[in-house]
Length: 45
Image (cartoon, rainbow, N blue to C red; front, side):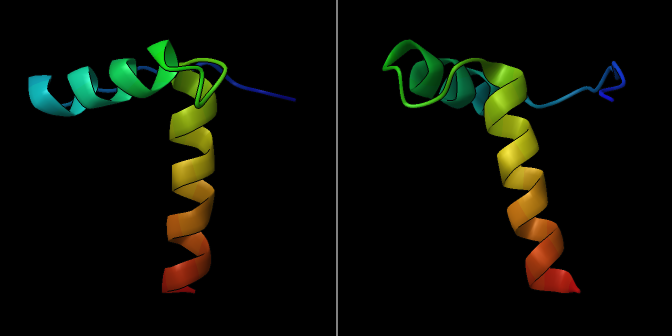
């Protein structure tokens, strides 16, 4: 089950995320942020 969250990010980070979504690299911002978070968590554990 997915839970909706709200976060604050630097404007340049959001612009980079939106660029990748626009290029069809990811389905949407949530998809990119979820995958990036999972990858980061694997690295630090």
